[in-house]
Image (cartoon, rainbow over all chains, first blue to last red):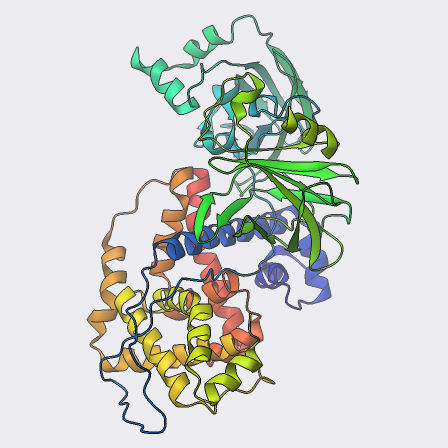
Length: 397
Length: 177
């Protein structure tokens, strides 16, 4: 089966409907079809964001003073009707999903007009230091620049919702062939002085157009590294100031939607995956989709900093103070302090049983600034730790 | 929370409390669905009211063996919406989508993608919009959606495919800009 024949079945597979075995086999093994699957998941996630936002803005219907009595039966369809004023109920349900990550496109002007698509991200390793976005081992957000021609291009990897800058760099794609890509790269942690990356860049621009050369000044001292890259592989690139950057790209004869995040269609029973999680509390959309984190192992935990709420810690196993959360594919629902939380993501959150119970804890007293590093308390982030007990110990400090 | 059977029995018995509970549970999702289906918030609210009242009035149509009460409610709403549409001049319904369609396509930035998707949704056919909403927001299966919209299963598949294709084009354009 080819992609064209399988195309109508991608949506069916995504929806959990029965699709021909041959189509399923093709889709699950074909990068282009998997990419489409991820696009569907991303679109679905945005539709749910839309639903959450609309629910939030839904005005109550006018109150119905009296329902028509069925015994007297004077009600006439079409006559003016009044309906009771009630609290609104969230109307968001279950979907399954896959991940969408960040694309970076580079076009080769020669070599049969090949395209090279690549992206950068910080690795999915686990971190044991203070809970702070500047220490995040993984940042799901990045930049999505326009398609561009060969030559040096700046890039930034930023925290959730394009807020604080974490890493800046310049990548210079020099040659694209079907079997290899030559490029040079510089990457360095930058200090945005507590501002959002956008504000920081605007400040730089205030003095005039912000060019690659301006970034070169900022990156001064960080080594320029040269790579001969094999498309499709994951490359780890050292970042000046600590850590590594994950580089991944593919060469093709056309652009396609692209994702570096290969989060599983079905997480293992000992995994929690939060891929572009969004959060609705009661009927308010608190967090838009963003960020990505995966944990595995009995003691590991994921966490999300929710501005105005605190740090939400999620684990597969019960721990002191934790509440149950019911996970069904890419949705999780739980109640904390008499408020209903609805968490949804691009990919299934937990594997194994459906629905599955995971455990959540909200540290209301948590502030990102408590680690002593600058962070705008209005900016969310996600992260993970190998041992939930360490996180709890930190939160008690 | 009362289950479907209890709620329905209460409504059959003419209990106001059962009606109120049903309204509390389902009015918001129903109105959101109808907003998508009609593209007109006022029409959606009118249809939602008519739907609840019809359910109260004709309390013999729900069969738990065929689906949930919510699914039944959505099915009535869809029929009411068609009825409403036939009674009201089309411009009343189409105004919102026409206005939206007249808007120039704006550049897609990451933070605007929800808005862009919304625009794209508005441009879809009513049934395509409804299907996407029922699937992605309400989580209905194809068979349930076919029942709600009163269309064959094949139509559900083809319209969903077409709707997703249209949204995907918008989505991918945004990604590649």
